[in-house]
Image 1 (cartoon, rainbow, N blue to C red):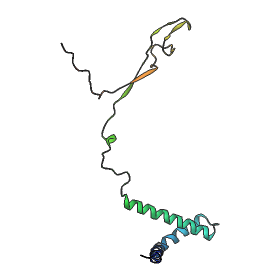
Image 2: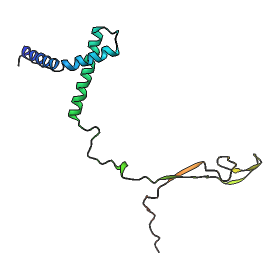
Image 3: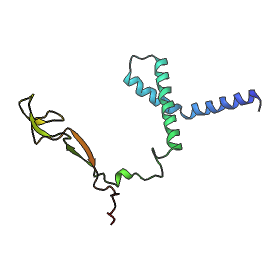
Image 4: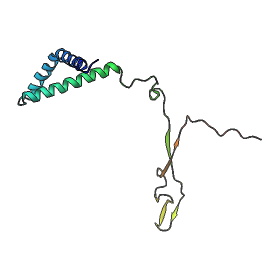
Length: 136
Protein backbone atom coordinates (compact mmCIF):
# COMPACT_ATOMS: atom_id res chain seq x y z
CA UNK A 1 0.00 0.00 0.00
CA UNK A 2 1.33 3.39 -0.96
CA UNK A 3 1.70 6.05 1.76
CA UNK A 4 -0.99 8.18 0.13
CA UNK A 5 -3.44 5.28 0.23
CA UNK A 6 -2.55 4.51 3.89
CA UNK A 7 -3.22 8.13 4.91
CA UNK A 8 -6.54 8.08 3.02
CA UNK A 9 -7.56 4.88 4.85
CA UNK A 10 -6.77 6.42 8.24
CA UNK A 11 -8.64 9.61 7.36
CA UNK A 12 -11.66 7.61 6.20
CA UNK A 13 -11.72 5.65 9.47
CA UNK A 14 -11.51 8.87 11.51
CA UNK A 15 -14.26 10.49 9.42
CA UNK A 16 -16.58 7.51 9.96
CA UNK A 17 -15.86 7.51 13.67
CA UNK A 18 -16.62 11.22 13.97
CA UNK A 19 -19.91 10.81 12.08
CA UNK A 20 -20.93 7.77 14.16
CA UNK A 21 -20.38 9.50 17.50
CA UNK A 22 -21.45 13.03 16.58
CA UNK A 23 -24.77 12.81 18.46
CA UNK A 24 -23.06 11.52 21.61
CA UNK A 25 -20.54 14.34 21.41
CA UNK A 26 -23.35 16.88 21.03
CA UNK A 27 -25.07 15.44 24.11
CA UNK A 28 -21.83 15.77 26.09
CA UNK A 29 -21.52 19.35 24.88
CA UNK A 30 -25.08 20.22 25.97
CA UNK A 31 -24.47 18.78 29.43
CA UNK A 32 -21.18 20.65 29.73
CA UNK A 33 -22.88 23.90 28.63
CA UNK A 34 -25.29 23.51 31.57
CA UNK A 35 -22.44 22.75 33.97
CA UNK A 36 -20.11 25.48 32.65
CA UNK A 37 -22.33 28.30 31.27
CA UNK A 38 -19.51 30.83 30.82
CA UNK A 39 -17.14 28.45 28.95
CA UNK A 40 -16.22 29.27 25.36
CA UNK A 41 -17.30 27.13 22.42
CA UNK A 42 -13.75 25.88 21.85
CA UNK A 43 -13.41 24.84 25.50
CA UNK A 44 -16.77 23.03 25.41
CA UNK A 45 -15.71 21.28 22.19
CA UNK A 46 -12.42 20.17 23.76
CA UNK A 47 -14.08 18.89 26.96
CA UNK A 48 -16.72 17.01 24.98
CA UNK A 49 -14.02 15.42 22.79
CA UNK A 50 -12.06 14.37 25.88
CA UNK A 51 -15.15 12.80 27.45
CA UNK A 52 -15.95 10.99 24.22
CA UNK A 53 -12.41 9.64 23.93
CA UNK A 54 -12.46 8.45 27.56
CA UNK A 55 -15.80 6.71 26.98
CA UNK A 56 -14.54 5.00 23.83
CA UNK A 57 -11.37 3.84 25.60
CA UNK A 58 -13.42 2.48 28.51
CA UNK A 59 -15.74 0.65 26.08
CA UNK A 60 -12.78 -0.86 24.25
CA UNK A 61 -11.23 -1.96 27.54
CA UNK A 62 -14.48 -3.62 28.63
CA UNK A 63 -14.70 -5.38 25.26
CA UNK A 64 -11.16 -6.74 25.61
CA UNK A 65 -11.32 -7.53 29.34
CA UNK A 66 -14.98 -8.30 30.14
CA UNK A 67 -14.56 -9.03 33.85
CA UNK A 68 -12.13 -6.95 35.83
CA UNK A 69 -9.43 -8.90 37.69
CA UNK A 70 -10.56 -12.19 36.19
CA UNK A 71 -8.25 -15.10 36.67
CA UNK A 72 -8.63 -18.84 36.83
CA UNK A 73 -7.12 -19.06 40.31
CA UNK A 74 -9.75 -19.35 43.08
CA UNK A 75 -9.91 -16.66 45.73
CA UNK A 76 -8.85 -18.62 48.80
CA UNK A 77 -9.39 -15.72 51.16
CA UNK A 78 -13.14 -16.25 50.78
CA UNK A 79 -13.08 -19.92 51.75
CA UNK A 80 -10.21 -20.38 54.19
CA UNK A 81 -10.09 -19.20 57.77
CA UNK A 82 -7.01 -17.78 59.39
CA UNK A 83 -7.17 -18.70 63.07
CA UNK A 84 -3.73 -17.37 64.03
CA UNK A 85 -3.49 -15.19 67.11
CA UNK A 86 -0.81 -13.46 69.15
CA UNK A 87 0.31 -14.72 72.55
CA UNK A 88 1.93 -11.99 74.60
CA UNK A 89 4.57 -12.77 77.23
CA UNK A 90 7.39 -11.26 79.26
CA UNK A 91 10.84 -12.71 78.51
CA UNK A 92 12.17 -11.35 81.82
CA UNK A 93 11.32 -12.07 85.45
CA UNK A 94 8.99 -10.31 87.84
CA UNK A 95 10.83 -9.31 90.95
CA UNK A 96 11.98 -6.58 93.30
CA UNK A 97 13.79 -3.73 91.55
CA UNK A 98 16.16 -1.97 93.89
CA UNK A 99 16.51 1.11 91.68
CA UNK A 100 12.74 1.66 91.50
CA UNK A 101 12.02 0.50 95.06
CA UNK A 102 9.12 -1.65 93.88
CA UNK A 103 8.30 -4.86 92.04
CA UNK A 104 8.42 -4.94 88.24
CA UNK A 105 9.31 -6.89 85.12
CA UNK A 106 13.04 -6.94 84.33
CA UNK A 107 12.44 -6.79 80.55
CA UNK A 108 10.22 -3.74 80.16
CA UNK A 109 10.11 -2.18 83.65
CA UNK A 110 6.34 -2.66 83.82
CA UNK A 111 5.17 -2.61 87.43
CA UNK A 112 1.91 -4.55 86.97
CA UNK A 113 2.39 -8.30 87.36
CA UNK A 114 -0.70 -9.07 85.25
CA UNK A 115 0.30 -6.79 82.34
CA UNK A 116 -0.19 -7.99 78.79
CA UNK A 117 3.46 -8.61 77.92
CA UNK A 118 6.06 -6.74 75.97
CA UNK A 119 6.77 -9.41 73.34
CA UNK A 120 4.54 -11.73 71.36
CA UNK A 121 4.63 -14.88 69.29
CA UNK A 122 2.16 -16.03 66.68
CA UNK A 123 0.15 -19.12 67.64
CA UNK A 124 -1.47 -21.08 64.83
CA UNK A 125 -3.83 -23.84 66.01
CA UNK A 126 -4.00 -25.21 62.44
CA UNK A 127 -0.24 -25.65 62.01
CA UNK A 128 1.31 -29.05 61.52
CA UNK A 129 3.08 -30.65 64.45
CA UNK A 130 6.52 -31.71 63.25
CA UNK A 131 7.94 -32.82 66.60
CA UNK A 132 7.37 -36.55 66.07
CA UNK A 133 7.32 -39.30 68.68
CA UNK A 134 10.05 -40.23 71.11
CA UNK A 135 11.90 -43.40 70.16
CA UNK A 136 13.20 -45.93 72.66
